[in-house]
Length: 348
Image 1 (cartoon, helix red, strand yellow):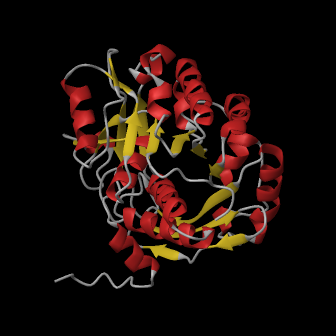
Image 2 (image 1 turned 90 degrees about the vertical axis):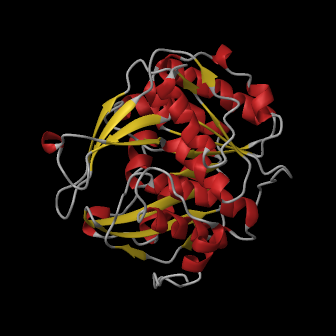
Protein backbone atom coordinates (compact mmCIF):
# COMPACT_ATOMS: atom_id res chain seq x y z
CA UNK A 1 0.00 0.00 0.00
CA UNK A 2 1.41 3.37 -1.00
CA UNK A 3 1.16 6.94 0.24
CA UNK A 4 -1.47 6.32 2.90
CA UNK A 5 -0.29 7.02 6.43
CA UNK A 6 -2.92 5.51 8.71
CA UNK A 7 -3.17 6.96 12.20
CA UNK A 8 -2.83 4.49 15.04
CA UNK A 9 -6.43 5.22 16.12
CA UNK A 10 -7.89 3.64 12.94
CA UNK A 11 -11.10 5.59 13.64
CA UNK A 12 -13.41 5.89 10.64
CA UNK A 13 -15.79 8.86 10.32
CA UNK A 14 -18.61 8.94 7.78
CA UNK A 15 -21.12 11.72 7.16
CA UNK A 16 -24.39 11.77 5.27
CA UNK A 17 -28.08 11.03 5.59
CA UNK A 18 -29.65 8.03 7.26
CA UNK A 19 -33.18 7.47 6.04
CA UNK A 20 -36.27 5.48 6.83
CA UNK A 21 -36.63 2.85 4.13
CA UNK A 22 -40.12 1.52 3.50
CA UNK A 23 -39.87 -1.68 1.45
CA UNK A 24 -42.63 -3.67 -0.19
CA UNK A 25 -42.73 -7.22 1.24
CA UNK A 26 -41.16 -9.93 -0.88
CA UNK A 27 -41.27 -8.81 -4.52
CA UNK A 28 -44.63 -7.05 -4.49
CA UNK A 29 -45.11 -3.81 -6.41
CA UNK A 30 -45.95 -0.47 -4.83
CA UNK A 31 -49.48 -0.61 -6.19
CA UNK A 32 -49.98 -4.03 -4.58
CA UNK A 33 -48.57 -3.24 -1.16
CA UNK A 34 -50.82 -3.10 1.89
CA UNK A 35 -47.88 -2.71 4.26
CA UNK A 36 -44.17 -1.90 4.23
CA UNK A 37 -41.17 -3.37 5.99
CA UNK A 38 -39.30 -0.73 8.02
CA UNK A 39 -35.52 -0.53 7.53
CA UNK A 40 -33.03 2.23 8.27
CA UNK A 41 -30.06 2.93 6.05
CA UNK A 42 -28.18 5.33 3.82
CA UNK A 43 -24.88 5.36 1.97
CA UNK A 44 -22.48 6.64 4.61
CA UNK A 45 -24.42 5.09 7.50
CA UNK A 46 -24.07 1.72 5.79
CA UNK A 47 -20.30 2.21 5.53
CA UNK A 48 -20.09 3.08 9.23
CA UNK A 49 -21.92 -0.14 10.15
CA UNK A 50 -19.55 -2.19 7.99
CA UNK A 51 -16.50 -0.60 9.63
CA UNK A 52 -17.92 -1.24 13.11
CA UNK A 53 -18.71 -4.86 12.24
CA UNK A 54 -15.07 -5.34 11.26
CA UNK A 55 -13.91 -4.00 14.63
CA UNK A 56 -12.90 -0.47 13.59
CA UNK A 57 -14.03 2.48 15.72
CA UNK A 58 -16.72 4.08 13.56
CA UNK A 59 -18.48 7.43 13.99
CA UNK A 60 -21.45 8.55 11.91
CA UNK A 61 -22.20 12.26 11.53
CA UNK A 62 -25.62 13.56 10.51
CA UNK A 63 -28.59 15.50 11.83
CA UNK A 64 -31.79 13.80 12.94
CA UNK A 65 -35.07 15.19 14.28
CA UNK A 66 -35.50 14.99 18.05
CA UNK A 67 -38.52 12.72 17.81
CA UNK A 68 -39.10 8.96 18.15
CA UNK A 69 -38.43 8.25 14.45
CA UNK A 70 -35.12 10.09 14.59
CA UNK A 71 -34.28 8.17 17.75
CA UNK A 72 -35.15 4.87 16.10
CA UNK A 73 -32.73 5.67 13.26
CA UNK A 74 -30.02 6.54 15.77
CA UNK A 75 -30.68 3.35 17.73
CA UNK A 76 -30.31 1.25 14.57
CA UNK A 77 -26.71 2.47 14.34
CA UNK A 78 -25.98 1.97 18.04
CA UNK A 79 -27.19 -1.60 17.75
CA UNK A 80 -24.22 -2.42 15.54
CA UNK A 81 -21.60 -0.52 17.50
CA UNK A 82 -21.50 2.80 15.61
CA UNK A 83 -20.65 5.89 17.67
CA UNK A 84 -23.60 8.29 17.45
CA UNK A 85 -22.36 11.01 19.83
CA UNK A 86 -21.67 13.41 16.94
CA UNK A 87 -25.20 13.24 15.54
CA UNK A 88 -26.89 16.64 15.84
CA UNK A 89 -30.55 16.69 16.84
CA UNK A 90 -33.18 19.00 15.40
CA UNK A 91 -35.12 19.71 12.24
CA UNK A 92 -38.60 18.58 11.32
CA UNK A 93 -38.25 15.21 9.64
CA UNK A 94 -36.16 12.26 8.59
CA UNK A 95 -35.72 11.48 4.91
CA UNK A 96 -37.79 8.58 3.58
CA UNK A 97 -37.41 6.36 0.58
CA UNK A 98 -39.74 3.69 -0.72
CA UNK A 99 -38.16 0.57 -2.18
CA UNK A 100 -39.73 -1.96 -4.54
CA UNK A 101 -37.55 -5.02 -5.05
CA UNK A 102 -37.46 -6.30 -8.62
CA UNK A 103 -37.07 -9.85 -9.90
CA UNK A 104 -35.79 -11.42 -13.08
CA UNK A 105 -36.08 -8.86 -15.92
CA UNK A 106 -38.03 -6.35 -13.76
CA UNK A 107 -35.62 -3.97 -12.06
CA UNK A 108 -35.98 -2.57 -8.56
CA UNK A 109 -37.41 0.91 -8.09
CA UNK A 110 -36.92 3.68 -5.52
CA UNK A 111 -39.15 6.69 -4.77
CA UNK A 112 -37.63 9.47 -2.62
CA UNK A 113 -39.43 11.60 -0.05
CA UNK A 114 -36.45 13.40 1.47
CA UNK A 115 -36.92 17.11 0.79
CA UNK A 116 -36.49 19.34 3.86
CA UNK A 117 -35.05 16.54 5.97
CA UNK A 118 -32.99 17.47 9.03
CA UNK A 119 -29.62 16.98 7.32
CA UNK A 120 -30.80 18.79 4.18
CA UNK A 121 -31.39 21.91 6.30
CA UNK A 122 -28.41 21.51 8.63
CA UNK A 123 -25.75 24.19 8.97
CA UNK A 124 -22.02 24.14 9.72
CA UNK A 125 -22.75 25.43 13.23
CA UNK A 126 -24.51 22.13 14.05
CA UNK A 127 -21.15 20.30 14.13
CA UNK A 128 -17.76 20.66 15.82
CA UNK A 129 -15.60 19.26 13.04
CA UNK A 130 -12.32 19.90 14.84
CA UNK A 131 -13.51 17.65 17.65
CA UNK A 132 -14.92 15.08 15.22
CA UNK A 133 -11.66 14.69 13.29
CA UNK A 134 -9.15 15.21 16.11
CA UNK A 135 -8.66 11.45 16.59
CA UNK A 136 -9.86 10.21 13.19
CA UNK A 137 -7.81 8.28 10.63
CA UNK A 138 -10.31 8.11 7.76
CA UNK A 139 -13.26 10.17 6.50
CA UNK A 140 -15.73 8.76 3.99
CA UNK A 141 -18.49 10.58 2.13
CA UNK A 142 -20.50 10.07 -1.03
CA UNK A 143 -21.92 12.15 -3.86
CA UNK A 144 -25.37 11.70 -2.36
CA UNK A 145 -24.61 14.12 0.48
CA UNK A 146 -23.97 17.28 -1.59
CA UNK A 147 -26.87 16.27 -3.86
CA UNK A 148 -29.35 16.47 -0.99
CA UNK A 149 -29.26 20.28 -0.83
CA UNK A 150 -26.98 23.28 -1.25
CA UNK A 151 -26.87 23.58 2.54
CA UNK A 152 -25.72 19.98 2.89
CA UNK A 153 -23.00 20.61 0.30
CA UNK A 154 -21.69 23.53 2.38
CA UNK A 155 -21.63 21.38 5.52
CA UNK A 156 -19.74 18.70 3.64
CA UNK A 157 -17.16 21.18 2.36
CA UNK A 158 -16.53 22.36 5.93
CA UNK A 159 -16.08 18.75 7.02
CA UNK A 160 -13.59 18.09 4.22
CA UNK A 161 -11.53 21.14 5.13
CA UNK A 162 -11.41 20.02 8.76
CA UNK A 163 -10.49 16.47 7.78
CA UNK A 164 -7.51 17.70 5.75
CA UNK A 165 -6.51 20.04 8.58
CA UNK A 166 -6.23 16.98 10.82
CA UNK A 167 -4.37 14.89 8.20
CA UNK A 168 -7.25 12.47 7.80
CA UNK A 169 -7.41 10.22 4.72
CA UNK A 170 -10.50 11.02 2.66
CA UNK A 171 -12.44 8.64 0.42
CA UNK A 172 -15.45 9.35 -1.76
CA UNK A 173 -17.99 7.08 -3.41
CA UNK A 174 -19.20 9.21 -6.32
CA UNK A 175 -22.71 7.69 -6.20
CA UNK A 176 -24.57 9.72 -8.83
CA UNK A 177 -28.34 9.82 -8.20
CA UNK A 178 -30.32 11.18 -11.14
CA UNK A 179 -33.42 11.61 -8.98
CA UNK A 180 -31.52 14.12 -6.82
CA UNK A 181 -29.66 16.27 -9.36
CA UNK A 182 -28.52 16.61 -12.96
CA UNK A 183 -25.13 15.63 -14.28
CA UNK A 184 -24.34 19.29 -14.95
CA UNK A 185 -25.05 20.25 -11.34
CA UNK A 186 -23.16 17.22 -10.06
CA UNK A 187 -20.05 18.07 -12.06
CA UNK A 188 -20.14 21.73 -10.94
CA UNK A 189 -20.32 20.72 -7.27
CA UNK A 190 -18.27 17.52 -7.19
CA UNK A 191 -15.21 18.50 -9.21
CA UNK A 192 -14.11 21.27 -6.80
CA UNK A 193 -14.41 18.84 -3.88
CA UNK A 194 -12.05 16.32 -5.45
CA UNK A 195 -8.99 18.25 -4.24
CA UNK A 196 -9.72 16.91 -0.75
CA UNK A 197 -9.96 13.25 -1.86
CA UNK A 198 -7.27 10.56 -1.56
CA UNK A 199 -9.30 7.50 -2.60
CA UNK A 200 -11.96 7.84 -5.32
CA UNK A 201 -14.52 5.06 -5.71
CA UNK A 202 -17.11 4.93 -8.46
CA UNK A 203 -18.46 2.87 -11.29
CA UNK A 204 -18.35 3.86 -14.96
CA UNK A 205 -21.63 5.82 -14.80
CA UNK A 206 -20.57 7.73 -11.69
CA UNK A 207 -17.26 8.79 -13.25
CA UNK A 208 -19.02 10.12 -16.33
CA UNK A 209 -21.96 11.87 -14.67
CA UNK A 210 -20.13 13.29 -11.63
CA UNK A 211 -16.71 14.10 -13.11
CA UNK A 212 -17.12 14.00 -16.87
CA UNK A 213 -14.90 10.97 -17.52
CA UNK A 214 -16.09 8.09 -19.69
CA UNK A 215 -14.34 4.70 -19.79
CA UNK A 216 -13.83 2.71 -22.97
CA UNK A 217 -16.10 -0.09 -21.82
CA UNK A 218 -19.67 -1.21 -22.47
CA UNK A 219 -20.88 -2.65 -19.19
CA UNK A 220 -24.43 -3.24 -20.42
CA UNK A 221 -22.96 -5.53 -23.08
CA UNK A 222 -20.86 -7.31 -20.46
CA UNK A 223 -17.57 -5.74 -21.58
CA UNK A 224 -15.90 -5.00 -18.26
CA UNK A 225 -12.27 -5.81 -19.00
CA UNK A 226 -9.80 -3.79 -16.97
CA UNK A 227 -8.18 -2.41 -20.13
CA UNK A 228 -11.26 -0.29 -20.81
CA UNK A 229 -10.73 1.57 -17.54
CA UNK A 230 -6.98 2.12 -17.55
CA UNK A 231 -7.12 5.33 -19.57
CA UNK A 232 -9.83 6.93 -17.45
CA UNK A 233 -8.08 5.93 -14.20
CA UNK A 234 -4.84 7.52 -15.35
CA UNK A 235 -6.65 10.68 -16.47
CA UNK A 236 -8.57 10.99 -13.19
CA UNK A 237 -5.42 10.50 -11.12
CA UNK A 238 -3.57 13.09 -13.19
CA UNK A 239 -6.32 15.72 -12.96
CA UNK A 240 -7.27 15.33 -9.31
CA UNK A 241 -4.16 13.84 -7.70
CA UNK A 242 -5.96 10.82 -6.24
CA UNK A 243 -3.69 8.32 -4.52
CA UNK A 244 -6.05 5.50 -5.51
CA UNK A 245 -8.79 5.20 -8.12
CA UNK A 246 -11.23 2.33 -7.67
CA UNK A 247 -14.21 1.07 -9.66
CA UNK A 248 -16.72 -1.68 -9.14
CA UNK A 249 -17.60 -3.55 -12.33
CA UNK A 250 -21.16 -4.86 -12.27
CA UNK A 251 -22.64 -6.99 -15.05
CA UNK A 252 -26.41 -6.88 -14.72
CA UNK A 253 -27.95 -9.91 -16.42
CA UNK A 254 -31.19 -9.51 -14.45
CA UNK A 255 -32.42 -8.00 -11.19
CA UNK A 256 -31.43 -11.19 -9.39
CA UNK A 257 -28.31 -12.25 -11.34
CA UNK A 258 -25.23 -10.04 -11.56
CA UNK A 259 -21.54 -10.47 -12.23
CA UNK A 260 -19.36 -8.58 -9.72
CA UNK A 261 -15.69 -7.60 -9.59
CA UNK A 262 -13.58 -4.46 -9.13
CA UNK A 263 -10.44 -2.67 -10.24
CA UNK A 264 -7.93 -0.51 -8.34
CA UNK A 265 -5.06 1.71 -9.52
CA UNK A 266 -2.35 3.29 -7.35
CA UNK A 267 -0.54 5.21 -10.06
CA UNK A 268 1.78 2.33 -10.91
CA UNK A 269 -0.17 -0.91 -10.99
CA UNK A 270 -3.68 -1.91 -12.01
CA UNK A 271 -5.17 -4.78 -10.04
CA UNK A 272 -8.38 -6.56 -11.02
CA UNK A 273 -10.18 -8.71 -8.46
CA UNK A 274 -11.65 -12.14 -8.93
CA UNK A 275 -15.19 -12.21 -10.32
CA UNK A 276 -18.25 -13.39 -8.42
CA UNK A 277 -21.60 -14.49 -9.77
CA UNK A 278 -24.35 -13.10 -7.56
CA UNK A 279 -27.28 -15.42 -8.11
CA UNK A 280 -29.81 -15.11 -6.63
CA UNK A 281 -29.52 -11.58 -5.24
CA UNK A 282 -31.51 -11.16 -2.03
CA UNK A 283 -31.11 -7.38 -1.70
CA UNK A 284 -28.93 -5.22 -3.92
CA UNK A 285 -29.41 -2.01 -1.89
CA UNK A 286 -26.20 -1.15 -0.04
CA UNK A 287 -24.02 -3.25 -2.32
CA UNK A 288 -21.76 -0.36 -3.25
CA UNK A 289 -21.62 0.88 0.35
CA UNK A 290 -20.56 -2.57 1.54
CA UNK A 291 -17.77 -2.45 -1.05
CA UNK A 292 -16.61 0.94 0.25
CA UNK A 293 -16.71 -0.29 3.84
CA UNK A 294 -14.72 -3.38 2.94
CA UNK A 295 -12.20 -1.33 0.98
CA UNK A 296 -11.62 1.04 3.90
CA UNK A 297 -11.06 -1.88 6.25
CA UNK A 298 -8.77 -3.55 3.72
CA UNK A 299 -6.70 -0.43 3.12
CA UNK A 300 -6.26 0.10 6.85
CA UNK A 301 -5.35 -3.49 7.68
CA UNK A 302 -3.94 -5.18 4.55
CA UNK A 303 -0.42 -5.00 3.14
CA UNK A 304 -1.29 -4.54 -0.57
CA UNK A 305 -3.96 -2.90 -2.68
CA UNK A 306 -4.79 -6.30 -4.15
CA UNK A 307 -5.56 -7.80 -0.75
CA UNK A 308 -7.63 -4.74 0.17
CA UNK A 309 -9.63 -4.99 -3.05
CA UNK A 310 -10.28 -8.73 -2.72
CA UNK A 311 -11.63 -8.15 0.79
CA UNK A 312 -13.91 -5.36 -0.46
CA UNK A 313 -15.32 -7.39 -3.37
CA UNK A 314 -15.94 -10.45 -1.19
CA UNK A 315 -17.61 -8.31 1.48
CA UNK A 316 -19.92 -6.76 -1.10
CA UNK A 317 -20.73 -10.11 -2.68
CA UNK A 318 -21.92 -11.31 0.73
CA UNK A 319 -24.03 -8.18 1.24
CA UNK A 320 -26.14 -9.14 -1.77
CA UNK A 321 -27.34 -12.13 0.28
CA UNK A 322 -28.63 -9.99 3.19
CA UNK A 323 -31.90 -8.09 3.51
CA UNK A 324 -31.67 -4.43 4.41
CA UNK A 325 -29.10 -1.70 3.84
CA UNK A 326 -26.48 -2.86 6.34
CA UNK A 327 -23.81 -5.46 5.60
CA UNK A 328 -23.93 -7.68 8.68
CA UNK A 329 -20.94 -9.94 8.05
CA UNK A 330 -17.79 -10.64 10.01
CA UNK A 331 -14.15 -10.41 8.98
CA UNK A 332 -13.88 -14.20 9.16
CA UNK A 333 -16.83 -14.66 6.81
CA UNK A 334 -15.36 -12.24 4.29
CA UNK A 335 -11.90 -13.79 4.51
CA UNK A 336 -13.40 -17.23 3.97
CA UNK A 337 -15.11 -16.16 0.75
CA UNK A 338 -12.10 -14.16 -0.46
CA UNK A 339 -10.02 -17.27 0.15
CA UNK A 340 -12.14 -19.26 -2.28
CA UNK A 341 -14.81 -20.95 -0.13
CA UNK A 342 -18.13 -20.07 -1.74
CA UNK A 343 -19.81 -23.35 -0.88
CA UNK A 344 -22.42 -21.87 1.45
CA UNK A 345 -22.26 -24.98 3.60
CA UNK A 346 -23.97 -24.96 7.00
CA UNK A 347 -21.58 -23.98 9.82
CA UNK A 348 -22.13 -26.44 12.67
